[in-house]
Image (cartoon, rainbow, N blue to C red):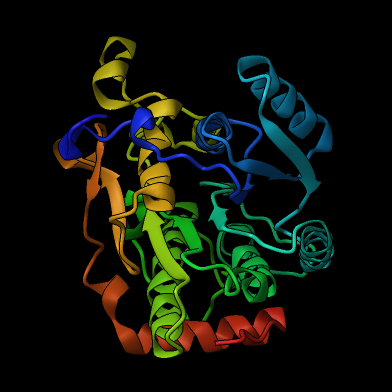
Length: 307
């Protein structure tokens, strides 16, 4: 076992008997999160948009860990109909869900809308996960110590605000600010969900994590000024997807984690390193904004929570 400040994959406790649903888990941080949980005995459900890629990821996990219990569930977070279908299928297949990891995301995309007409980053990263969590929560609240882990980003501090007057960016578009809004929303959702769960005295907790600067497919839309100019410097700034998965894994499994906490890399600027407890921006903690976002999210998705 590692020390608390060098928490690593080998510190994940035995997950036998637990069911973990992970969105966007065919690649990057989600894949490495799934791999480690499966290696530690969890039944892992890869909730992915592309079934072919999901099955290939499941095969890779089986190859690395032949005893792994891995399933694939089709889920397109940019479609509320798909979210409802996936939640129904997951509910039928799994009477209990111990961990839901809201990991999938799109970053810095050109202006696009979801099937339901939402701005793509806000619609996928926040509203899709808001809907999925609301639909799965009744099954989770039956399970003592279950967890909802939502993956945010350091970008929740960059040009970030909840633009209540134009949530869908219909009047102009800034892809960096739009991503910041979606990642700020992930944190506000976590804090408001935790407050609601605690008020109902539920043992289910809501926790957040961020991967720092990790080398994943998400970076394909990164603006040139945000890319390290010198490829030799990349390893000093960017960490592997496996390291980037550690804050999520700690949030999902460490017995000492409490509801409403936020985990990220412990190195300089939270960009890399072993996971530790970190803090969100002051804005993310504004209760009035959290509650306003919650009400709007219920209205837009048509999902009402049981808490």
